Amino acid sequence: MKTVGVVGLGLIGGSFAKAYHADGGWKVLAHDRDESILGIAQLGGEIDGRLTKENIGSCDLILLALYPEATVDYLTEMAPHIAKGAIVIDGCGIKRFVCEHCFALAKEHGFTFLGGHPMAGRHFSGYKYSTKTLFKDSSMVIVPEHFDDIAELELLARVKELLKPAMFGRITISTPQQHDAMIAFTSQLAHVVSNAYVKSPTARSHKGFSAGSYKDLTRVAWLNEDMWTELFLENGDNLVKELDTIIGNLTKYRDAIAQNDAATLHDLLAEGKHCKEEIDGKFNR
Image 1 (cartoon, rainbow, N blue to C red):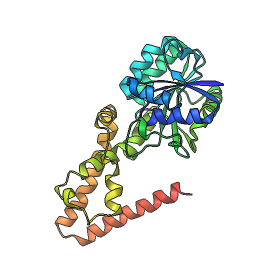
Image 2 (image 1 turned 90 degrees about the vertical axis):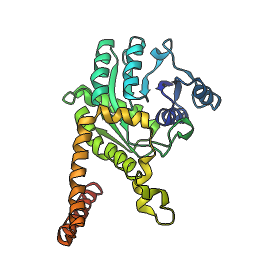
Image 3 (image 1 turned 180 degrees about the vertical axis):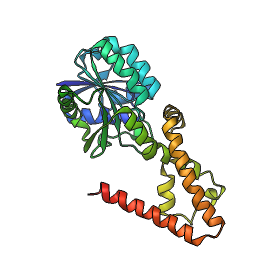
C-alpha cells in the first residue's frame, strides 16, 4: 500500500484526501493548521492519520494544497524530512513563484517536485464542500522542471499513475511561464470581471430580471479574497496585460454605443461571435 500526504484540507486538499482514501490502495496522512478540520477528517474515516515531520518520510506522494507563500514555507520546513525518491506536487493557481523556490528545494534535498494545478473547483471553499469526485474528468496541469530529458518522460508516466485516484480526465504539461500567462486569461481575469460586475447598483434590484447570462457571469464573483489577492499579485504582470486588453475592447463597445454607431457596433459584435466560433471549433474537435 502506498502512502500519500495531503497538506491543507480545504476544498482541493480535502477532495484529494477523500479521493485517495476511496481508492483503497492508499494510506492517507494529512496536515492542516485547523485542528478541528483534522479531527473531522479522522472521525469521518477520510484520513488514516496526521502528517508530521516524523512520518512524512514514509510518503510516496505529497500533495500541497496551500496558498503559494504558505506552500513554499511548508516545503522549506519539511524538505529535510522528505524521502529521496518521493514525488511532491503543489496545487497552487500560479506556478512561476512556487516552482522557482520548490525546484531548488527538491534539488537540494533529493526528492522530486512538480508544479501542479487541478482545473476544478466549486462555488464554495472549505473541507465540508470537498468531494472524492471533484477532479473526475477535469484537467490537471503538471509543470516539470525539464522538458528535454527521456527520464522526464518516465517521471511523467509515473506521476500519471500516482494521480489515478483523483480520476483526472487529462494531464496538461506546461512551463511555469506558459501556465501563468494562460491562467491570467482563463481564470484570473474571469474572477476580476465577475467581482467587478456585481458592484453595479443595479445588481441589488435584479430579481425577476435575470436568467442564465447573469448567473454565468456572476458565479465566480463569490471568491476567497485572501487567496485571490495573493494569486493576482503574484501574477500581476500577466493579469494586467489581460485587463488592459479587455478594457481596450470594452472601450470600443462603449464608444460605439455612446456615438450611436450601429455599423461599428455590429462589426464588434460579429467579430466577438466569430472568435467564439473559432475557439469552440478548435477545442471541441
